[in-house]
Length: 147
Image 1 (cartoon, rainbow, N blue to C red):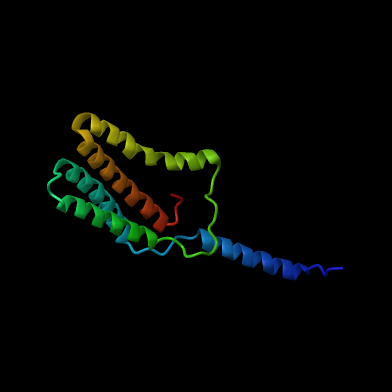
Image 2 (image 1 turned 135 degrees about the horizontal axis):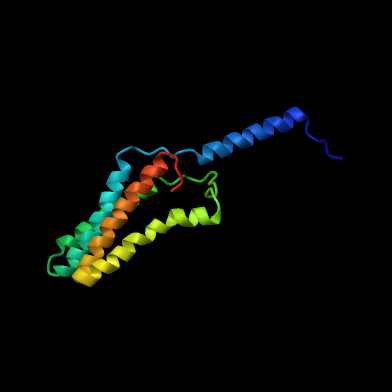
């Protein structure tokens, strides 16, 4: 028969589990410059894609877009935890859904941009909106608030 833990051992195990959970849910270490840099890089990448579409004979816009988006991906990759415990998002399904709905706004705005300025307007408006959203959500993540 297996020996059951004593109350002190059980309490100690619960303390360790609680500490691990708190650490997993805590704010991620992130420099203060990263949220604005990531937001500006994402916006710059999309705006440059729009300009590359408009000025097809000028490859500099396409190169600038690629550089901005690669740097954005590197910035985001630097915030990802290397393994370890990744907690499930907090809140009810409704609360989690409402927190994620703002991600649709840049695409809706991009659709309106397309109505008035074509592909260039769509990419510029959606890109700027996504950049602002990325900046905002990274600031929330840095401060330990559910994004």
